[in-house]
Image 1 (cartoon, helix red, strand yellow):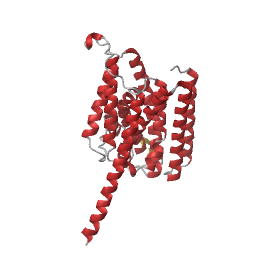
Image 2 (cartoon, helix red, strand yellow):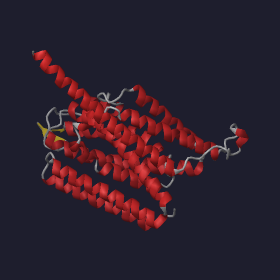
Image 3 (tube, one colour):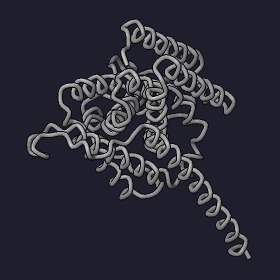
Image 4 (cartoon, helix red, strand yellow):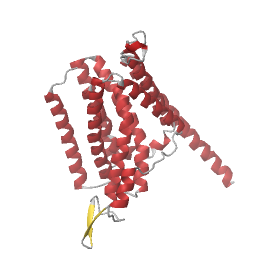
Amino acid sequence: MTIEPWVWVATVGVLVAILVADVLIIGRRPHEPSMRESVSWIALYVTLAVIFGIGVWFLAGGQYAGEFFAGWLTEYSLSVDNLFVFLVILTRFGVPRKYQQTALLIGIILALVMRGFFIAIGAAAISAFAWVFYIFGAILIYTAIQFVRGGTGEESEYKENAVIRWAKKNLPATDSYNGVKLTIVENGKRLVTPMLLVMIALGTTDLLFALDSIPAIYGLTKEPYLVFAANVFALMGLRQLYFLIGGLVTRLVYLPIGLAVILGFIGVKLILHALHENNLPFVNGGDPMHSVPDIGIAVSLGVIVGTLLITTVASLLKSRNTAQKKDDEEPAQTH
């Protein structure tokens, strides 16, 4: 798949235009978006992603279109899981609801910049070293195990990383928010507001998420352009999704299990592909193992979609049964 430079420029240009429009809308009136507003924006981004995938189908074929959709769904599901941590961060820092939209938007912009950097590094590493797939596969399998060991939907544990701890210790800060401003002058001294610390927390946390998501999508497509596009479409609607399903996300109790299955599957797929293309001298004498199956994108897409459907339905049924059981117990306790 050959991508002309002007296509990259046009794609980034459209992305910047959307982000600028988003910033101007929020900057003019910081607010908590209504359900109608959130649904409209999410529908727009999902529609754009589908149109993009159909365009890839017509221009580059079904193989690349399937890779995009598989990557987009995987990145989107990982982004939904990220909402658990975002919810904890915004709650812990006590961000007023009307300012949370701005914090999330800036955090998403930082995430896009950092992921762009990781995508470039990943593409260069894959081009130069085929054995990188072994490392990517091991990372995903390890992450899948951590998802399983971490529970099934309990509140995500969030620990402040070294960057946030350093910022809190070394940056002169005020305890009060001043709108969405990052700094404020008090008694002639420039202080940072909690909003700056929130954005640092969101940005650095997503940096850690990228260490899992980038290997995951490179397990589905080796095309940097599709990797970039899938990440963009997965992150662009994340802010509105936060407000739309802020309560629902806690009901997706089996989401970590579903993500573990997806990441574990992609991890195994990557290792099988690495064996299929092997050039490590201490593995099979440095010769490729062509007898090892190379899982196709159709199977990958089926596993991802099927796992997400089963996970979502099972989670909602579990949450409904739990709520029903709680309602049945309350009258008995009252009596």
